[in-house]
Amino acid sequence: MGQTSARFAVIAVTVFALAMALNLGAFAVAFKLPDKRSIGVCSMVDQRIALAKAAPSPKMLLVGGSGTTQGVNAQALSDALGIRAQNFGLQGSFGPGFELFLAQKALRPGDTVLLSLEYSAYVMDKPTDIALDVMAGCGRDYLARYALAERLQIAAGFPLNALLDRATFAAAPETPKDLPAYTAWGDRPPGYYAAPAKAQMRRVALYRPIHVIMLPDAAAAREITEFLDWAQDNQVSVIATWPNTLEFEEYRTMPGFGQIRRFYEDLGVPVVGEPQIAMLTAEYMNDTQYHLNDAGIHVRTARLAEALAQRPELLASLRSN
Image 1 (cartoon, helix red, strand yellow):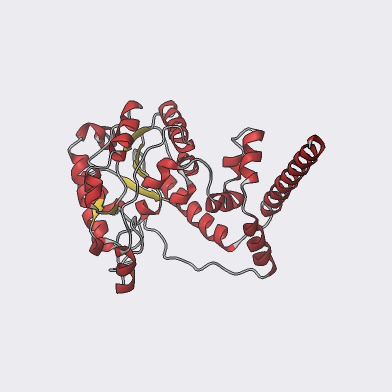
Image 2: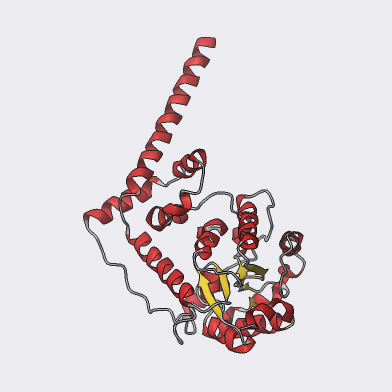
């Protein structure tokens, strides 16, 4: 029995080692191969950074996932508050660490970050497949920040199917579809998010309340905390607010919202408004519970401007020049 157990243990360790080596090899190869998704997303990242760098400081950088892009109009917010706001919405699947690392490239002393992370971000504990795929394309400097053991752990999670996608793309490259350019404020042009089709509204109607929760031991919490340390060292202010989402009655009593507020306030980060200022009904949604159509963006932006206007001390440094 002892010999059988030992043989099984050797086989298990060998299989694990081979699987790990295969994944690490896939990651190494993927680093050298482009793919359609990463080219398209990295083009978006490059545009975001270039526009935000070009925006005059002091500015308020709106940082979050695609819900920020498709939720707040930075030009309208600028006009309403008499400041310079810049939309820096990326993808919620990036996770806070990667999003905030990219934002650092565009931030200058005296700037303010308005952090509006999707609720799913607060439970993230490892990079998603999409994040790993994009990091292989335009996030190598982000990965380089990690110790070797952490980089090996991240590489081990690289999806093998992504290697196949990259190999297929390398054999028959395609040009990603060009999207309309962002405005100077980082917004999509007027009319880009028109009222959704009935099929989209039916799909949105299928969404149910998500379980909003803050996991203080998850990687996301550590990444946000590390960014706050960087912000303090670089004279960048940070404000938190709520992501736009589909409204549900259940959200009025769900304790997760209080957990998120306490997380920020314990770190000295002011939280603007109540969660309900960012909750809208189905007619204002576009294709997901985090994305708004043009009418929804107008409502959401007006509510956010009103909430920020009630905290003039948070805007004083942005109006100083």
